[in-house]
Amino acid sequence: MSAHSDDPARPDPADDLLILVPREARPTADAIAQIARDAPWLDLAGPELGGTAGGAIALQRAGLGFDLAGLAPGVPLPVPHPLSARELPEDFAPASIAAVSLRLGPHIEAGRGNLAILREWFALAAALADALGAAGIVWTPAGLALGPALLARNLQAWTARGELPVTLLASFHPTLDGAVQSSGLAFFTGQEFRIEPQLVGGTQQVDTLARLLFRHLVYAGPQSETGHLSTPDGHPLRIEAAADGRTIRVWPG
Image (cartoon, rainbow, N blue to C red):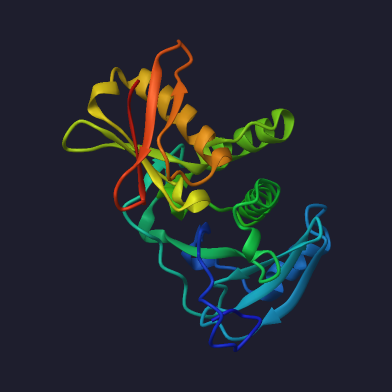
């Protein structure tokens, strides 16, 4: 249930963005409020929120409301496994970490795929991670654990150039039949894509193609009809939704 309401019709809040903190130093709501008093990256912290087993506090940044849940002294939130790790600290030890969840507040939950909201969400997570000495963050829609330095570089580039940071939002995995499957696109469109084996070349080539497709499909939205796209070197692609509607298959020409 949402920390803001006992309405049974309201779905449980999604733990999409987790901050990996030392298990023995999991913050309390009071500690977060203390951090917020001197933090230029937060407008407001509080009140503490009821209705959640781990404890929570409301936060506000750039006029947007967030909830930080899983705080001490309550039960810590589980860390999903397996994860694809990207630039985590060398001393990262899963057994010694716990997760707190930075959730979208109820009034912006409906806009969770909005890129302006997403950027503020990640920026707040990065600032909190730094203040809490966190090992990194987890973006659960793509199964990614991201180290602080990687997060900072990509957020800086996102702000400077406005380019969607695929590194933070998506992962791409080979399948047993030689295709490449995305993870993370469904957060935006409800669909993932599959690059068919006929298009899978070298590692760098398929990664470039996967990133191109991810950016294109985030902006294009859900696909229900056959479409066409070209690779950067001019090769035509055919994009079509699978029968189940949840996967977009990408073929040559």
